[in-house]
Image (cartoon, rainbow over all chains, first blue to last red; front, side, top):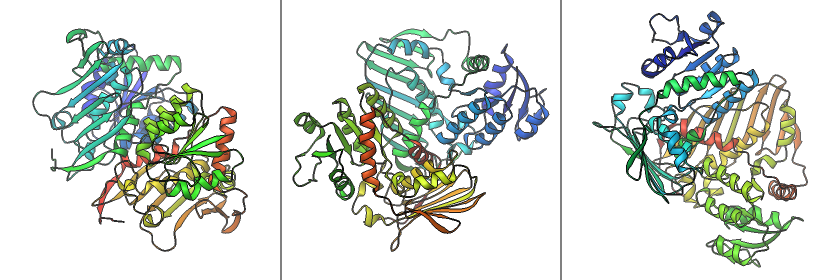
Length: 303
Length: 303
């Protein structure tokens, strides 16, 4: 099936293009981007132009920033295309509900992807936790925004979500693996004096779980979650790629498929089944953190 | 049926107590409050104590501020009571989802109330708009926080929602009367230098609708919404109590039942039907405004 990719930035080139190239299901037929190009693939400056020029495109995958994404997604759905959304699936919950309604009305598939849920050890962690009780948990998600989002000012603008852009990856794993739903009890948001979105956040969640998100980590990066359960300690390290039970390695790091190839395989399956997959639980937690969060001004940040 | 009222503050005494007293369905059997009392009604300092002392209480109505409300609501549901929530139904979306799950598991009714939806002219406005197209709309919701929430500092704390406490009333009417779902495109939030929650907000919504919420209005109060449609102008004034079509009065102001009596009648109906009513659309819009909103510091505010 032919697919178009919209928003040709770092994540598109690093992950989406290789995943599509390696897929038996998809052929990259067009790109939509103001500046980015993929060599050898027809490029268009806007979505409407691509949809008109390429009527044989069956699906559109969107990796635009969240704020401009809605109009592009709605245009693709209205043209009868299946749509796949990079995380977070939108700038607001209401707009993703609207896209889901539109996909239903058009009879096409909508997939709100959470790439971290496809990390190596997530399924094993979920299976292990299913019959356990969590007593306490610690999420530590600290990375260097200059390394992963060089010069991407939109991430600190209103709607860009700041440190919740990586933090939502942790929350997408958490909401997948926990046997009972989790909620935010309180939140502290550190907002740079010259920005709108937080650069660090500390959350207190139900089930004794805390989260420490920080975008200012230089040197080694940390994407860990540790749980104390009624059956002893369990940890997911390296962004969900390594499982430890009782302190010993217990899985992960040996799968055939990476996160993005797994997403494109799942998208093909959804299209074949005529189904959609739109789970907003991680985004609800982020919206709740913004609604409930105590804001604190911290030092100005520049790339 | 016997009902207990938790959180005996201004809204409980002004609205809930008279509505229960006038109801044929309900008898006020107990109150739960740290400080407030209702003369002639047994009062308890905490929910667990009341639930143990009054096993014949069938339902609990909660008018606590949103942040402490969850634990009280969960305790009442776990004791097998039906639960009615003042708006907003919680401090976070995830906690209201959790209460809805709990009510389902316990087989009891949960009613997330939106009192403004019971205003006189809302049903007529909804019926009139059903086959119209909205070209533009203006919501102006300006009231004096010192008059309606005297000394209630919680309203400006993190999770208190600030001007969205009245603004969510407008959004609850809007999400009831519009024929198609609405979403927030952008938001500006004015936050006093000494507070966490906004004292004023301006929203740009889909369908050409703007909202102007302000908590600093002295003198006459304004709770209006005006729409330009393909069939001419329509307005809802006085918080949904007066309908104007083409500039002329067209309904409202003559009903038998006030907003809160209508809520208690509806609660009795839900209990008799074994049903729940939890519509989070107004709260999703508020969470979206907090997530997407551009914050601006304004003058400090003190009661």
